[in-house]
Amino acid sequence: MPHNLHHAQEWLRQELGKETSADDAGTGVVFVSTIEDAVREADLAIDCVPDELESKLEIFCLLDRMSPPRTVLATPTTRMSIADLASCTYRPEKCVAIAHEAATLGEEVSGEVRLLTTSRTSAETVLLLRRFWSRLGFSPVFATDASETAALRS
Image (tube, rainbow, N blue to C red; front, side, top):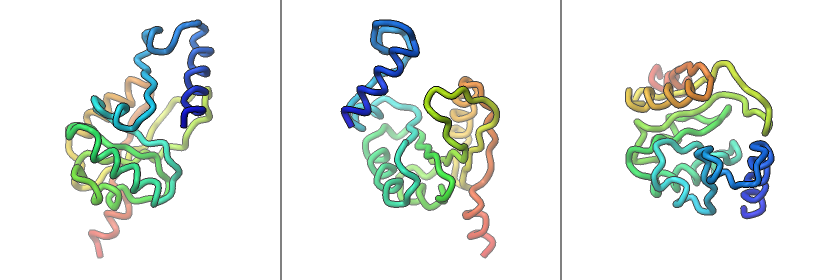
């Protein structure tokens, strides 16, 4: 939404304490107004849609279709199976769930981040996520999606 995009730009500008845009300040943050522009060159795409099946499926399908084949798709969720979401994409080996409670905007966070993988998750995906979260000051902890493990036992 244009209003939310503007709000995010203003918040970051104020946090930086500068009159320049985030793009000009060397933050590496680029604001775009379409999903296609956002993922065109992405190595990692993390959605921010509500934790509802319909929303997650819709965004995963869009990201899968619009991002390069190398892009890892990650989704914050506390209720959904990443194995189920990954099975709806052409890249199930590059799909991971983030089982970490979201922080409030501006709140300092640190510690562990729990990442749920599937039996199909590639070593390359795990390495990319390990590096990404470590650079942000988190200790990534990987676990297999419990719903996939239960289904395999059945």
